[in-house]
Amino acid sequence: MQTTLTFIGKIRTPYKSLDECPRNINFNGPECTIELDPAYQHDLKGLETGQHIMVLYWLGDTGNIWNNDYWHNGKPSTSRGDKGTFALRSPIRPNPIGVAVLPISKITADRITVNGLDCLDQTKLLDIKPAIYREITN
Image (cartoon, rainbow, N blue to C red; front, side, top):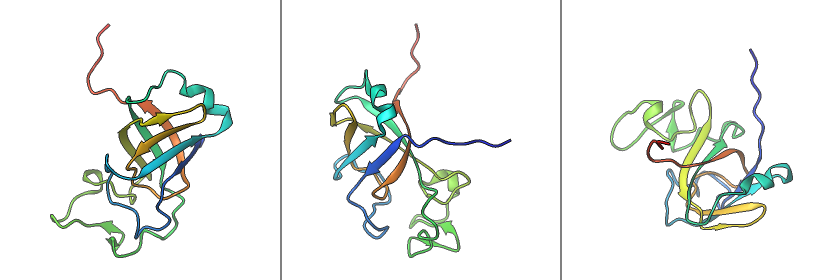
């Protein structure tokens, strides 16, 4: 079975290298822009400023840049001791998908502005979903 993914845009951040990139999201971090390709811009309808969204992005086109001081022997490490892949936001994982839940600070016809994403500039966008913190019963 073969699965394909469709990238729907890109994420613009101030981070051009991993040395600049934070290791986690920060709600008070710098402004970041989620730019949608024209075919998907109409799908922003219904999203509003202040609403929390889940942003899914692809960390798979980074090549070997993860082999630096942040990572050793291909495994992430933390100052609190060893943790498994699924306990970390590490890009070194079976499917290199990044995710962040952030409030929308601004929205226009073709882009969403948020603060504090933790990915490199030009990261490929996979999806945007409304963040739901509880089950809706109706």
